[in-house]
Image (cartoon, rainbow, N blue to C red; front, side, top):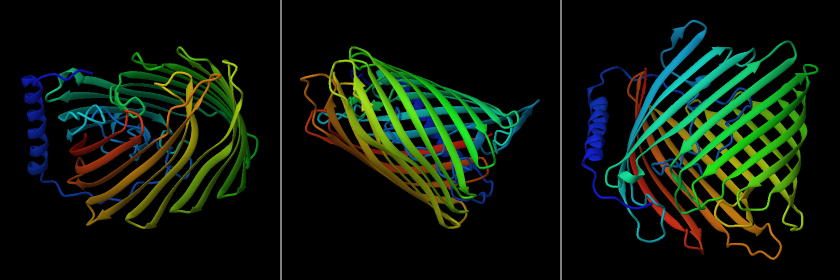
Length: 432
């Protein structure tokens, strides 16, 4: 993307956003609310999967952050017939010293983001023990002070429905994302849209045994010259509660991967998964197995191990630890005829202090190793990526939260797409 000159209109809007944040900080007189660390997901006993490469348009890595959904929304609830309506808004000002994540000739800018969020829930959308519905939508208005060609309106929308007649569960998850932020592998900012559909059926044969069938479709559209791709998967599972705290499952997954200007791929996985609620304040979940992948190019089949492991631990009332580890196969977005195996780890700690402050430290590491998917093809050099992010949040009242953070991230590669990046920012969240 090309750099642009100073845009007076963008600077004026950013100054207005900055003044609004300062006004919220210094003019609010409500007492601070009592806080508690993030709670564990009651459905799994641990937090959802963490993605180290989840970089936002302003450059911030949001790997470990609660999702903005109706299920975990806070603040006042507006009643509209059978629906609960949650409203909040987030604003941020961030100084980013390398907005294009380049190895040399780094370009800096001040980035302002305003993200209103609407969450609608109906039925048992909090406990999820009966039928429920949840709708979430959050656009992000992104403004650059000096490089207005990067101004964008990103979007994140989700629809979740579960119908639970007797021992059956029928569910649909529909998601849509439109992003404009950096992609580590590409070493640049990239516009893309991702549309995911998940349809699943579950049958509880008894209080201990259940069967599940999942069908997924993922449509991933990236700006040229990156390679867009579509993925279809079908998975079947059988789960068994060995004890009230331990659940084990076995399953099989098959997938078809259609990649633009590249040979298509198919794969099969055999997996085992487990959930263990060790105590009320500690839980772990994970899956592991093997994957066999075939390539329509005539390249030989490839077998590899895959896994995911995550957990939450609350050793004291005001302290929470999170971790997530994973190994998976990905198709390259920039290297023709290549895939890569990514192995990674993320972790975080949150500490509540004086009832209204939260100190946090999060970080993560990825190692990506490339291999050829066509006969006689070569493979790019591996690369490593890591980030670290300390921060503090001040819960000024039941409605206002102000946060300050610093983030350092770096990609180490023998190719031209290595980079390092410093970011400093302030966040403001308001719950209506």
